Length: 498
Image (cartoon, rainbow, N blue to C red):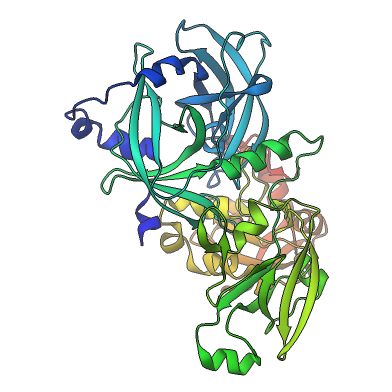
């Protein structure tokens, strides 16, 4: 699949920089030279958390990128750039002047972040970029990069597709421009603005150097983010909370009692979401949203892009709190439901889709490491985590809404065992699902930590779904050996619950 071949632009280009360096450099246009001060360099240092050793962080990293200067003294970058940051610095391209910056708003789902310099006058004299949202297939966009001298390099590409695709966090789908463009490696290429007629049209999302195809976060998503960022309480992008399937199959339409050709078949409605609250049911056919009719593939006719998936109406066009009319057929009868859209916070998932900028929760009991399942933990297995990570845990993450419809819980796992006197015989255990501790049901690390305090006849009894089904630890031995365990493995604290 095309999207699977994409990897982070910075990694791809670093790996291919030797080959790219042989190409003739693109020539900065006169218009680009006039606008070069609308960019600043962004230097980031940070440390991400180590989910295999959750009490510590990984080695420090540094990233270098470009930021687009916007009105109100703000700088737009991707969320990927500033995730798990310790320090962010802005640098003026023409003078090299530097200042620290703060992350004002960040949205990992839309992969966007707003920075503000600590020195309020730092951006004075820089004419901010305006945003243009009228990009269509066939337009040419210029990718702006900076040479080490500060000269601006503009590389043009052709917009080949406007479609809905998953973003890196992989929650729902967002509008995306796909551009055919011969990008070149530059050290500040982690974030690259894409410009049309001297106005910001998008930001680099991902790039495949082999096919020379680039996906961009488009201006409509950026505009939505900025409008929401201007509110006192940033709410994020909304969602409806249901899954669907096309109705191209005439037998499916007959089974659902559909009277007219068009719409999508509702296959799942997640508990507690706007769709369920509005009364949407499995088996309903969604035939229209607002004034837009849906075809059998779930597309509507957008005045700018033509046919595009209806999820664009719920992300780029609607905001959390909006009441959106859904036209449906149920048993062949037309109905209307009004969905009040909400943003679903990462904490509302059984297996949270991301935990960036937050230390992972854990508890170490006698050498047994307990954690709560999250996609951030699974991603420790690398880009192919869906195949490389323990498949039972991947299954729990993927089907969490069906497996745990009550939602108000976490999946506690025994992730690994540290060799110690109290764990002799248990050294090879890993990736077990904890169900009970000392007879008490465990739905979170808080439950586990509380249950551990109440041994049964001097033993801590841990029950798991998988073999060996039951683990027993001598409570007095666990307590006595705790200081040595911390010293031997460099564990600052045996648990982090907050």
